[in-house]
Length: 147
Image (cartoon, rainbow, N blue to C red; front, side, top):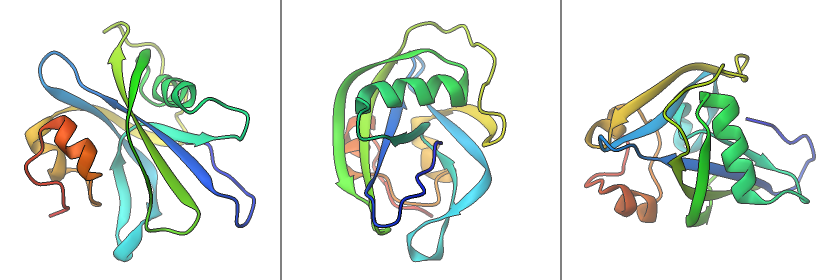
C-alpha cells in the first residue's frame, strides 16, 4: 500500500473487495503490521492503497489489487465510505470483480507476505479489526467485529 508522508493530510485509502464464484473473498497478509485503533494491529486486510488528490479512487483500488495480489480486477461500484478511527484516514470500499482468474506476478513483494482466498464465513478469523457494517452486509457477514 502506498503511504502518505504529509502531516494532517487526509489519507484516502481505497480498498478492493473481491468475491469469487466460490463465495470467497480476496485478502492479503502484510509483511509489516500497522497500528490500528484499540491497540490492534492490521495484519490481514483487503488489498488497497492511498489515492493521491488527482487519482480516481476506483482506479487506485484496481491498481493496488493487481500489485498486491497479482489479480486483475475491475471496480463495479463503491460499497461504502467512512472515516477510520485513526486520525486522517478515510476508507473507500469498492466492489470489484475478477477480470481473469489467471494470476500475474506479485509486484508488491515488499509489503505483501501472502495472498489468500478465504471463505466469507471465516473472514473474521483473519481480520483483527472490524469490517465496515455496509461492507459486512454486502459480503453477508453475520459478525463483523474482531474475535
